[in-house]
Length: 572
Ligand SMILES: [Zn+2]
Ligand SMILES: [Zn+2]
Image (cartoon, rainbow, N blue to C red; front, side, top):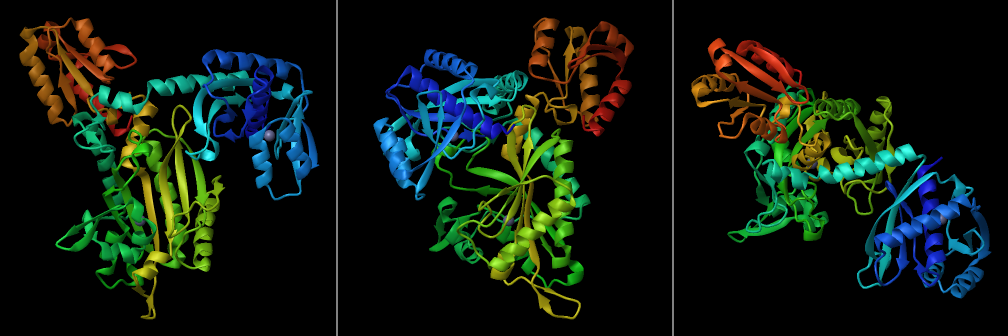
């Protein structure tokens, strides 16, 4: 059974239940959406929790009654008359906007009828597991000057087990919200009124996490044949006119003047990398050239769309541009795909979704270029045997792209990698290389990010692990707890030995009881706790507690360090 059809059918059943309870409420629309469905109703006051229970009970009656979804085709005129007689003004408006001479309607039970293209389930009895989730106000057609409607969100699954798992994940997701956990654990905050909205402050622990990600990326990029570059944050607007950003992306750019000259705060790293490519004559023997930068960019985002680390006004991309020969294109795309999956796995993500986005309405470049670029991306996905969806018209203005979304522990998807094929910018900037016959040719350019915005990735990472990071990523890897002041000296020695070995270690010398201090360390999700008492001090040992395992025994400091280093090297 198709989940979309199930959920959409369930929205009909919900509308039928609402009409059965409140016959005067008018119906708007009720599509299936990712993870569920909704229906919009014309009603002044919002639905209450009690209303939702009532509706759910009525829906159960309708499901138990095993009512068939009966399709009929009628003429537009008939349909308009039908829905006018039912006082369903929104449906009449929808039919008036339809061009077709015939429209389809669906009936369930003896009273309920809805305008719909379908398809639906055969019968209401096929719904085995559903739940109404929440209510919200929504404008008709999403336009603020239109009447405010009342929306009910719900979801349906093939069976109760899947539904229960979804509901469990949903409530777990609320607890894991990075906007709460981040500040609570001293990782970051985004809420400085004096600084402005959508700007991220990394506190010491968050900065460690971010540096670990950056360090990993730098080493791995160099290993894979990329070269690191750094480009300016502001560049003259002429450059952005040439790249097309000024015409196609201006609303998102910060433009300002220095000495009467117009400048742009960079929203993307591409033009900077292009200037570096252009600074020398390039031979076919030099290609592919892969330029990598942890590039911080600033974009104008409306206040209403800002959201935690997911939508911010300043962020850093793990951005690279690959300049290659046409015959290298497929291998380069495949190389990036491998790089993405290897990196995601290292950070604990093993599930993903892939989308191929094609030409949007506003675009630069020729149709033939768009076609060959789209084919190159698709061929690489096919060569890797990967499943993907096509996202019609969702490409960037300068080329089609592959988007890879990671799936976190709660099965939610987060945008991360993008691979964009671009024939347009090399043309605009007159990029070239000298081929084996000494002729000037135009290279192909790939734009790609692996994790995408580091900010968003850190948000995903925090929620995926519930901030309970594996040892190699934990901002504080171990906490020393000296039981009494007589062992402070030994504890100090242990701490400096661990620090010298590059381990991230803190100490809790407070007067709290041992149990309280252990409990605090656990709340702060610290992987190892080292308890030091007189016995350990005398024997030169440490008593170790491991997260999730409790006491793992007394051992020599060197043995402990050996074990911990192995765990870190294995990225656990
Ligand atoms: Zn329908
Ligand atoms: Zn780019």
